[in-house]
Length: 128
Image 1 (cartoon, rainbow, N blue to C red):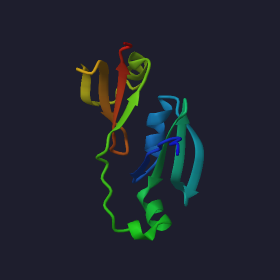
Image 2: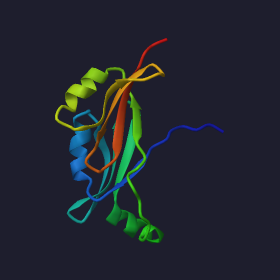
Image 3: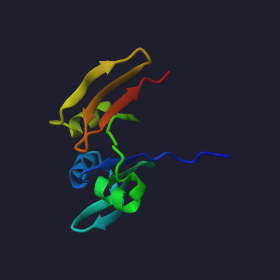
Image 4: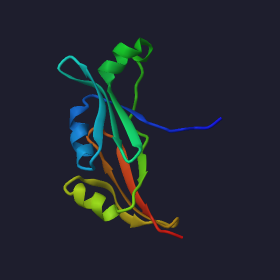
């Protein structure tokens, strides 16, 4: 058995504000599923990394058993990048929820909160 990928599905009230955040980092929408006059689902991708967004309304319609579930945006996303300064420049104006820091495990990192409420950590690791 071989695991081939892991793609988080993030549940949000509205996808469109999240798209603007990820466009700053050159993520592209590779799949869009409309629901009414809004997006209900989207797959974003860049450099072999993917993430999915689904609106809570779409989720309720897609899997009615989840209609009464409370999904919190409490699981942070952790990205390892090769140029943290470039990420910082692209996200100028986005409030950091964890300031830039050097860690005991050899990384420099900072975290922001994207428009859907999820914490996103960007980290650059020193080469050993």
